[in-house]
Amino acid sequence: MKYLLTAMSLSKKYVQTQGFFSRRKTTINALDNVSLNIRKGITLAVVGESGSGKSTLARSIIRLVEIDNGEIAFDGNDFLSLNSSALKNSRKNIQMIFQDPYASLNPRMKIQSIMEEPLLIHKVGTKQLRQKKIEAMIKRVGLDFYDLDKYPHQFSGGQRQRIGIARALILEPKLVICDEPVSALDVSVQAQIVQLLKSLQKEFGLTYLFITHDLRIVRHIADEVVVMRQGKIVETGKTDIIFQNPKTTYTKKLLASIPGIKKTT
Ligand SMILES: Nc1ncnc2c1ncn2[C@@H]1O[C@H](COP(=O)(O)OP(=O)(O)O)[C@@H](O)[C@H]1O
Ligand SMILES: [Mg+2]
Image 1 (cartoon, rainbow, N blue to C red):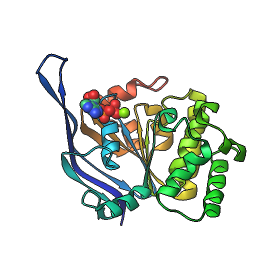
Image 2: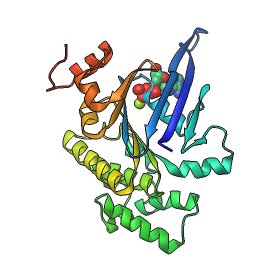
Image 3: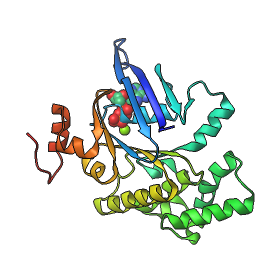
Image 4: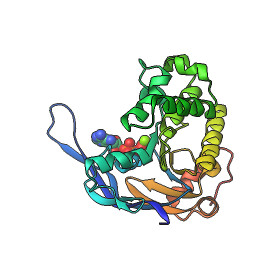
């Protein structure tokens, strides 16, 4: 099986009522017939301006959002028709890293419990084995054994994202969906986290769906790129080719907005 994930013709509409007293409704096509394939072991970046549907795409793949239409297959299996126990098992294989690790880490839980929780949910190992995994993973992401006894607020933004990464990887997933994982961080910290994600990918043979509005990062991490605009895919291809020879005006504009990059005309 060449593709780890295939998504076919995904569609998702949101209906919003405008204003409190108004009955006027607007429909947003957050996903409009979106199809993509992710080969095993690569990083596929999804880029596009804010509101283009990137997070909706990520959330539909892990079924945090129920799509209106379309098909998703993970590792060759139809992901949408799975029963609850098969879904639980597949969920273990697809983990997500969020933009704001502070919002996604329970502030009342120590790092120890934050990392143990997914292992308990999926009934992994004995207490001893879980502890070994937790300690190895926290070290692997550049933190210390003693950090397990702390709370999320005791860490910097970059460190919190390291914890978010550790928690996502503790279940040894196959696919990791990163939704703007470094967008909230300082530029110097961004580089460190991108570097960490790259080395973890190599070590664990991970496949990444990497969502960002920042094309500078795409160049460093992605093998292939999908460009989204208003819920549609407007362009797709190998990273080098997209950067050297963008086909659509929209992609050209996105590239031209990168500081310090030569403008394509
Ligand atoms: N829960 C929701 N209810 C209504 N509209 C939503 C909801 N989530 C997203 N949208 C709308 O769908 C569009 C795509 O949003 P999103 O997927 O978050 O884009 P991106 O991640 O690229 O910024 C936007 O217009 C957004 O306002
Ligand atoms: Mg988003």
